[in-house]
Amino acid sequence: MTMDPHPGEPHDAALAGRLNWLRAGVLGANDGIVSTAGLVIGVAGATTSTGAIATAGVAGLVAGAVSMALGEYVSVSSQRDTEKALLEKERGELAEFPEQEFEELVALYEAKGLREATARQVARELTDRDAFAAHADVELRLDPDELTNPWQAAVASAVAFTTGSLLPLAAILLPPPGARIVVAFVVVLAALAGTGYLSARLGGARPGRAVLRLVLGGAAGMAVTYGIGTLVGAGTG
Image 1 (cartoon, rainbow, N blue to C red):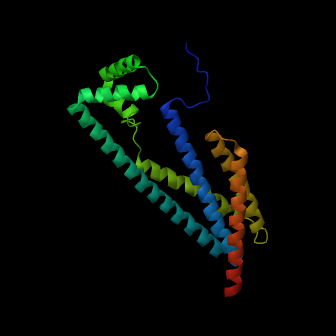
Image 2 (image 1 turned 180 degrees about the horizontal axis):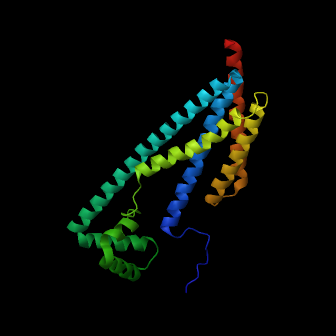
Image 3 (image 1 turned 90 degrees about the vertical axis):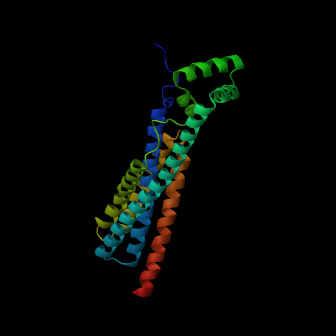
């Protein structure tokens, strides 16, 4: 039995894909935390009305989730269309120019550092098994059976954003009016520290800088929106 010398590293393509989705989910939740926190704290700076804060928060949550989902759907749909076009082009080239495509595969393996004889042997074995899959993998870096799904991406993005948004919304609405700003600041900064740590760990980076960036950025953003909300509230009150 062969032991993996680096069991913590995502050598498997499916595992790497799942980690990418997880990182995207964490970042989507972070977007929900930051944008909704800025919105509700800004409104709370202008008014103590729980109804007004709740209305603004829920509206921001829904609008943000829809925007994130739509943006992700359009982006991933365009990516998927491009991937399908590239795969179809490659399939046609394999059918029309099989020998040239074989030599291209050999050259690609040589470019990866294999000697010509080894590259030719590897290319021949993979071509005999599945020429299309071999070219899709080495030349296009695509798996024809694992193309991006725009609906899955849209739903995941909306759910992640909504999950993140619920935290600052609850933190601003549940405490009594006199404590809601302080509570919201503390809860949001703690949540940002958590998402920063998690995203850094998933990406294999040191979490210290990621946490510091998010916490300082979140604190600055909330301070600015609160200050603007207070000024607006004073000017219209």
